[in-house]
Amino acid sequence: MSTRSTLRTTGVAVRAMLLLTLVLGVAYTLVVTGIGQLALPFPANGSPLPDDKGSALIGQSFTDADGEALPEYFQSRPSAAGDGYDGTSSSGSNLGPENADLVAAIEERRAAIAEREGVSEDAVPADAVTASGSGLDPHISVAYALLQVPRVAEARGLPEQQVRDLVESRIQGRDLGFLGEERINAAELNLALDEREGE
Image 1 (cartoon, rainbow, N blue to C red):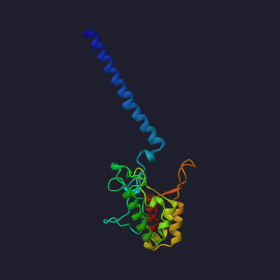
Image 2 (tube, rainbow, N blue to C red):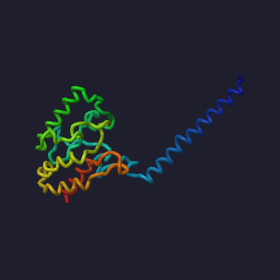
Image 3 (tube, rainbow, N blue to C red):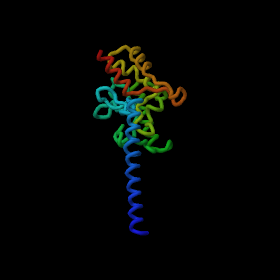
Image 4 (spheres, helix red, strand yellow):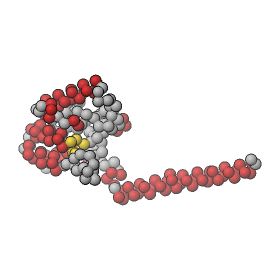
């Protein structure tokens, strides 16, 4: 291949790279970002909770420095992401259902939750003792939220029915009306509880 031909081919390749970088790397990114900001600004910006209290998409821990549940808050499901709800370490435990360590952890959690909530171990829902696949799920089942109502109401000195009504008002339906289960975002529920108590 001649030098002239090589230079021409190199020039075409460089121009194509620059054009595609501008179109796909800059223009496309700006268009998609603009559409996201116009059509879905809340999720496009990370679904932030008020007052910089985290994201509605990532679970949070409501425990003290020793890892004990704060009685005035609804507890999230366990997390296997880093030290718990670490967005940079998203993952499940990757332990199979017959793994002895997982079975022991579930039994330990079930006993602790049953004691904390004053119920039998059979009444503890599965999501209360198992982490989600991402380790970041902010949702708990309606059953787990209702199980915690008496403790939270007592810790806050509120009528139990008032706390139960708040829980029921925060129930999110199935996606598209038929996918998944009804659920409650624990962080949003706790935030609503704090706001209501502060009124």
